[in-house]
Length: 368
Image (cartoon, rainbow, N blue to C red):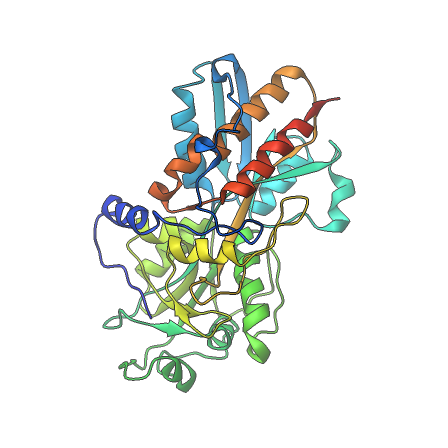
């Protein structure tokens, strides 16, 4: 019914997350098959990683950074002549960098707006899903290590209409919990962020009349609340501020030893932000032909409702054969070998059928 994280070492917490997430669910596009990744599927093509050379640069989503950095390190052992850099700058910045051809790939947790698509100088952009994970609602409230929050209550908190921790609406979500009369200090992302996009989409879906600020990589937050850059910045500010609450990806929340709430899902259940909960959300999601999908407030008793997707986006047409090969190699690794280690850094791996669809899409990347 709830979750909390006590001040243990981050590595130990990640190990616990990995063990808990050993069994993840498949997406609606499959028939309840096990969530094995493409790396263990006999139809997965072999890739000659030793053939990769030169460099690839990427930027964007801070949400997926821990997964990307581990994959970069691990792939280097197989592709020693390829240098990959990824700068966590926020989804908006990553999309802008790809638009301007500053990078060869971008990480994003949100989709390109229709009105922005003509601005991408390289033409058609392809979405490659990589992993998914919960966005936690992390808080700093002395004496309260068990907290449940509904969408409507969260909408009031982040719209700054609920301003103290013992507000009747918070109390109604937490019968029997002794809530202090402590002012709430709301912390949000100050940079353009896919985490903000997905968190506010949950509030739009579940916040009812309490949430009127809409959704996007940025929103017009109340002037009374505080902003911080990147997920890690929000985590640091929440940890250092009594009474604070903010939305933080699971990996950064665990690394900062934050305490986080259970959130009410579409089935009316308060669900903890775990990898199992993220996998259950994927199971209640329909994947579109372009490999985009929306697990926010997905159906299912066990689904964690603020589960964020994330993608690596690239141009369908690459400038030369070397870049084409490097992009294909990088994406192949993310979709195969890296899936096996996703749980270790706080992410739910993709269902096997979605991996296979993404691997098939690699064949559409051309030189031109």
